[in-house]
Length: 74
Image (cartoon, rainbow, N blue to C red; front, side, top):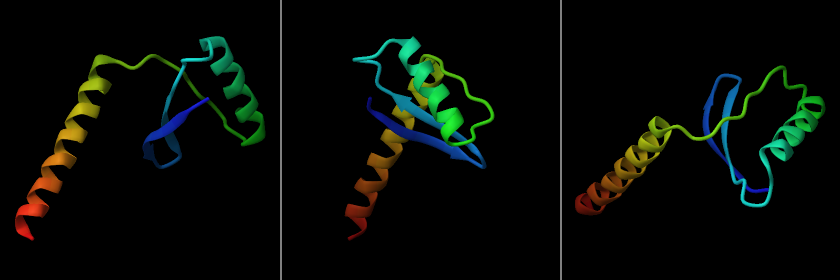
């Protein structure tokens, strides 16, 4: 299963998980295994919202603009 860290605040983490090969039930099963192994107190799983998709695009656009600006300043 493929995943990447999206956000981290204090002791809260948000991961993006690819469900290409696994059902949502398999994802919850894996989270239960992690819960016991890593002493996780609570977790949730949900589909990506339109707001989250917008924020991802905004962050990507912002980082592209920063790279372009940095190149111009060199």
